[in-house]
Every structure is written in structure tokens, then in C-alpha cells.
Length: 307
Picture 1 (cartoon, rainbow, N blue to C red):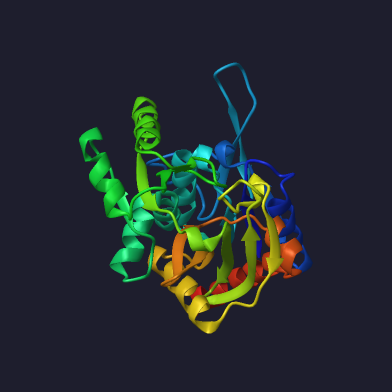
Picture 2: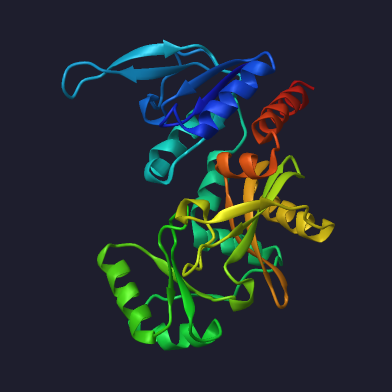
């Protein structure tokens, strides 16, 4: 198969591992800069699966070169290029190219509020959450999630960025004021103290958990993200937790997903679902071949589509 890996940075661990795993299984793997893919609308002069790549030209004018036709893509769409990245994925979908994550599924997972709404609609357990549209609603929102301290999250954010813990109402108000000034949106969420700065990440591929780790926040930090200095150990989640993570991925329409949970006094709670989870931390913590599992899913999905 001819597999394209959409990634802004070919040097990233996840990008390199996916390319290596594809080649090790006998496929042609091409790393493609997402923002360099030309998105044309209304053209019918390209063969199915083909795409053009923008290359350097005169200032303000880029030339194009034809990419080899692809059978499948593995999108690694960063938060900073979400809008254009979704257009690129839709462009490949329209050409009938298999993708490990549809543009719609990526968009659902990238929007934290929409993601939580999807999980709530599926009756999956999530932390108590409130959306604040007006400053005068702040007190009621904080009370609705269980009082202070409370977690304030930007609706769009990754790797723990845009997530804050507030111990005072004035702090929450200042955060929301700043969010409003930046024309961003935020939610207020209950703080699960008994989690003690620990959470779990499960990698779900085709309704199966292929790797799982527990992340632990450093001293003085409540976020357990590895990019925030957290550490990780391999775990074997119980069947109920795997079923919960699988249901969360399915609610977003994702065949490949990183699902984050934390353990509360009332059981595991879903935090968020990531359509392009980083592979470095979990592969090194668990020794699992997550990249290989993703490529194996691409092979399986291709066989199903041919049938």
C-alpha cells in the first residue's frame, strides 16, 4: 500500500515511528507536510487519490508538484493547523483515500466542549462541567461543578496547555476575562482531588486497547501530561475501563484514539479523547508497538473496503 503520513514535522518521534512501521510491513510510506497539500475545489482533472504538493516559488506564488496516488493516510493534525488540516483530510476523503481518522472525527475530538457533549449523550461518565457565557453566571457555574478548587479549560488545547486550577473565585473570573479578551472559549470543570495528580491514557485501535499507561504529575502540579514533566508507568487496565475508553473513541467516530481517564471516588471518569495521540511516551513506558498496531489497522480497513 501507499500510505501518506500527514505531519508538519518529519523529525517527530510519532511521525518517524509510523513511517518505519509502515515500511517494515512492506508498504510505501511518505511523510507529507499537511500545510503543503494544495486544496483545490471544483477540479476533476486529478486521478482518485492523487494530490498536489505546494513547493517554493516566487514570493506569494507557489508552484505545485504531483504526489503519487495514495491508498491511505494517517493524519497527525496539530492544533495550530486544525482548520487547514481538516480541509486536507476532507480532500483525501473525497478522493476515496482511506484515513485512520475522518475530518469530522478529528474536529469532534479537538473541540473539548463538543467532545464532552458527545460522551454525555452516550451516557459515559465525565467530570461535572459547566460552560460560562456571561461573567454573572460564574458563581453558579462553579457551584454546579462542586465548588472550588475548579479546573478551567480552554475548549481548544493540547498537552495540558490551556488547563488551569483555580482556588479562588477571583482567579477564575480573571482567567475567563483573559479568555474573552483573546476571543477564546473555556469551560469550568470539577477538580477530582482523590486522583492525586494521576490519570490514565489508553490507546484504542479498532475497538481494542493496544497500550495503557498511568501518568503521574510532578510535585506541585495537578496535570499529569508528560509534556508538563509528568512520569509514566505501564498498566493493565481492567475490562470495564477498556470498555469505557473504547466507547469514548466510538462516540467520536475514531478507530484510532488516545483516551484519557482519571479514577474518582465514583469510578473512572473520561477526560478527553485525542485523534492523534503522541506515541513516544506510551511506547517507551509500555514497550508496545503502537505504530505497528495502527498500520495493521490500516491494512485491515483496506481489506474490508475492498470487500
